[in-house]
Image (tube, rainbow, N blue to C red; front, side, top):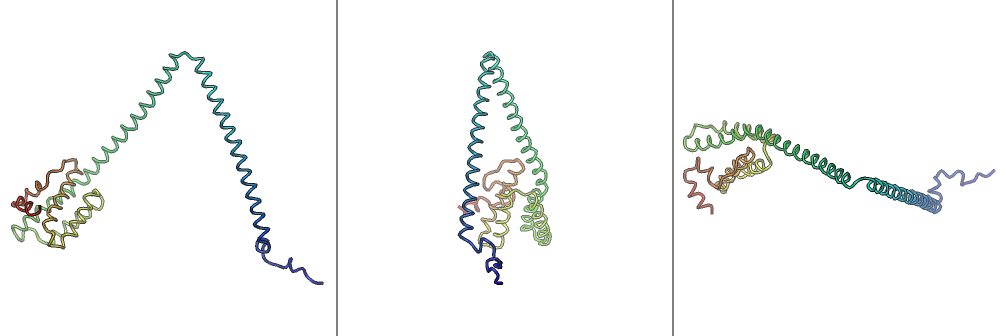
Length: 216
């Protein structure tokens, strides 16, 4: 007795009849599309009826209320919304103030150590041996660690640029003013206004006016 080759074919129906499989898939897609369209149609229709009835209900209520009552309701609603908005804004402002105060407290120590390090370096240039290179490296390492956690983006960016410029003696003067920019950014982070170019440097650089003249 001969066996039917179609029954012994291990391939799936989609592989044996790709055309019929495509037609069947398209048919099912059309059915799903029609069902989705029907659901959306009746859904929007029901929603329109619900909105219309709600508006009619509001109209009936407003017609039965006195104008004074309606005005009072509107005024009360506006007052409640205003209070809620004011409360949210006040909470947001208070949170920002607390955040700035918290960050300023965390930054104060490291920023102060940075300024102290700058003055130590200046003293070393005038009195060799008063501030060793090893101590300088330790201070820079300590400040960088603190800056990693608490430094603002502006201070971090300028500090990275300052470190990169430090290996290039040709930009020593520019790096000096970049140092002042770092201190000005620190002042801003701590809630103190910036000062004009050269003012902070004049605290420890005697000939700052001539340096600024050459840098123009």
